[in-house]
Length: 132
Image (cartoon, rainbow, N blue to C red; front, top):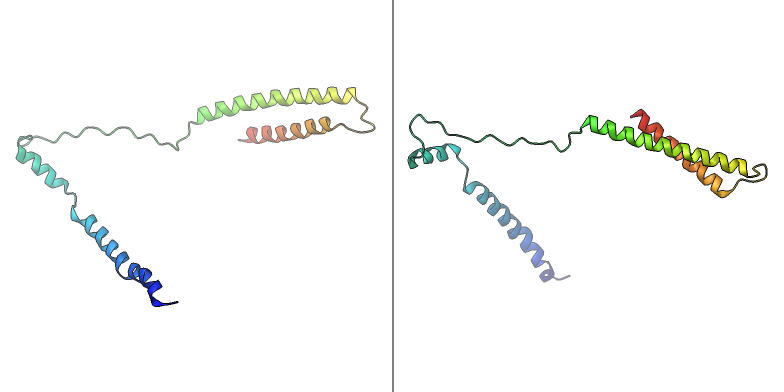
């Protein structure tokens, strides 16, 4: 490869990147904030009388988005648990009816096995909800 193909990269490494870093540093330090200067500016404008305090409005209450309402969470878990138990009961009743209506000594139907698998999953879900 010839040296002309590397010129843009060399330019970027040697001049452009350090130049950008210096420019960003200058912009950050160019206008420092000085709250004491703002206070004296207000006094000089005549908005504050000598001995008068600067009124600062109260800050708005900050709501923590990660804070969890425990009562609401427990109530939601209880409702979900109740619904899952009802569903488990109806699935178990249906499974019992299927078993009584068929001759299970020979083979089990695919629907019977699917319902049994769903009951198993639902019972595991209920178990984890009850633990929490």
